[in-house]
Amino acid sequence: MHALDNPDSIVREVEHAVARLATAREAIGRVIFGQRDVVDQVLITMLAGGHGLLVGVPGLAKTRLVESLGVVLGMATKRIQFTPDLMPADIVGSEVLEEGEAGRRSFRFIKGPVFAQLLMADEINRASPRTQSALLQAMQEHHVTVAGQRYDLPHPFHVLATQNPLEQEGTYPLPEAQLDRFLLQVDVGYPDLESERRVLLATTGVAEEQPKEVIRAQDMMFFQRLVRAIPVGEKVLEAILSLVRSARPDAGAADDVKAHIAWGPSPRASQAFSLAVRARALIEGRYAPSVDDVVALARPILQHRMALTFAARADGVTMSNVIERLTRPYL
Image (cartoon, rainbow, N blue to C red; front, side, top):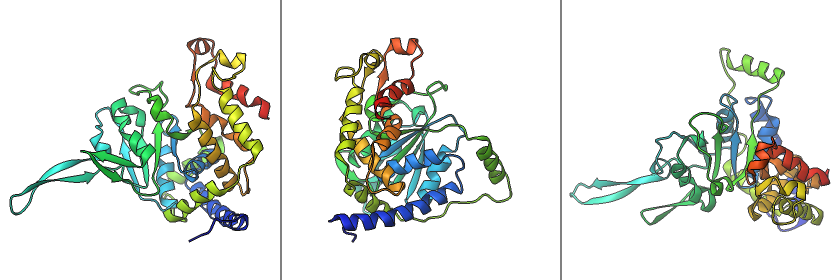
């Protein structure tokens, strides 16, 4: 068992983790081209012990990324394709009535795909809000309850959900309570020209390179404990609290921001910042986070935890505009 009981041991383990994570990033980069920021943000999410929401139009390798992560990180992965007719029992599982050899009947629980270390919820906003909410208890409490019986989920447990933009047909907005459970919202954009050229050549040949395991699930669990052991300076904590509170219309937001925000982030955003900035420092080989990490993670942490007013949307104001204004004092 690794020890994290003193600064010297933390430094040693950080050095070890940095090397292992660099290998994992390289392995993912062999099959996912031109999405370095996306890969890093997903790794940050998992190192922080959270769940991630990947948003982008179809065809940008979101599903391929999650599958590759499951292999590279040595996690048992399952996939759910969300559709309008998907039911909650299709996610958590259900009880079936069985009859034994002696004719005695009894119920047996058949586990659903949520019982995985890495669950890919593909096109999560294609399903109804009722079905989407079936993930809430699992994401927050790491167990599900069926017929009054509690069933614990495996460790580690992460949900990486993919979502199409709401402008696409046949999509439903996610409930605010569920959005708040996602540590980061990762926006997946189109690749640049050179990356798209590599995708074209790599995926239309005779053989396509497959990801390989380089880290075990047990290692990831230790790295998650290591993230929590990394110290956070007072200056960084003050930046986190100040930024989150300035995004709330009734808690000290500037007038030019207050007019654009309908509602702001909860204290869960501060918790997400505290973990995510440490995870970002770890994958970049640093022993402590800085205010630059807070600024870099402001958009993926805040954008799904805030809402614009109707007037702001009518004036063409975007969430990116608001977050850029919020982070300006820290640049």
